[in-house]
Length: 79
Image (cartoon, rainbow, N blue to C red; front, side):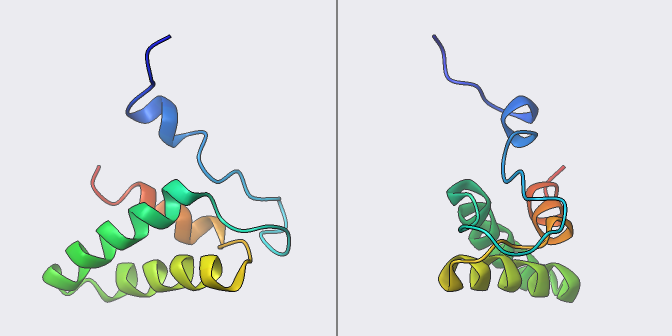
């Protein structure tokens, strides 16, 4: 079976609980994306994206779940 790329994969990433709190660590793909978006957002001076990336990265370092709004911004940044 071929690996999935693009939108089909993005929709499956980081299905956080409805409460947006508690539970395990964020998906590795969303954290990797947050580092890439953080670099681009720094270059562009996009403060809202920078803060969202930092929250996603901090959630991974703390072992918590990032807010879905932050993850959505990170995963949709280059669209």
